Amino acid sequence: MQRPAAPALRVLGSPIARPPTRRVRSPTFRGMAQRILSTTAPLAVLLLAACAAVGDAPAGDPSPGAATSLPTAAEGLAPPPYTWAQLRWSHPVGASVTSRNESARSEPVFTRMTWVESSDEGCAIASAAGPGLETLPPVEGAAPQAWAQLRDHALFPAGATTVSREPRETPAGTFDCWKYVVESGPAATTTFWFATESAGAPVDVVVTTSGEETSRMLLVESTRRAL
Image (cartoon, rainbow, N blue to C red):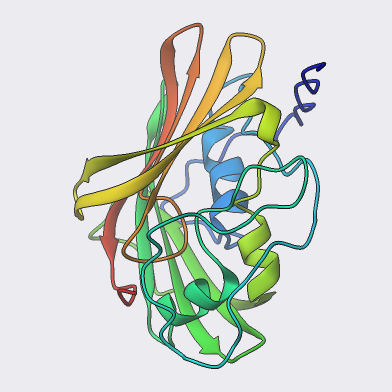
């Protein structure tokens, strides 16, 4: 059987400017990773190769519980780390996620996403960014997102993705995680660690090129609700 071709990479935008603060225009973990990790020169994060329906829990029980196995994936895609029902449960109004974004060629940038609206169908996320954790400005903006759309940010092509399970230590604590190693280009990989105890943005993202770490997005604070 012929192995699927590696997905094409998208070159990301220009580096973040260096003023004290900056609004993040796309407050999703993929959008934030794209904007922050692009502070390294020609490096890109693997983008969504396809959008497809994935098996999900019904909307009945508001607490779907932590997954002991991964959800069913559509053909050609690796199983996602969580369902939209788990994602919705982990992000009530007021839930917040703060990450430190590092690159080999720039100073760290801190980003914060806060859920300001939440319903059965979707949510609205406000965001902030700045060079220091203690000096982050108040979050602003309220970008609407459907839960299914947010869940689809964690879909990766099966032929380019290896999934395993391992603990991952972060400044926000040590988490049992689903580990996704995604081939994102020649000699390049992007590794995501998704906590099993709460759905949402990965607790750690590491980009490597030719075996050398070039970018990282690391969880430093989280008030997500446990599954």
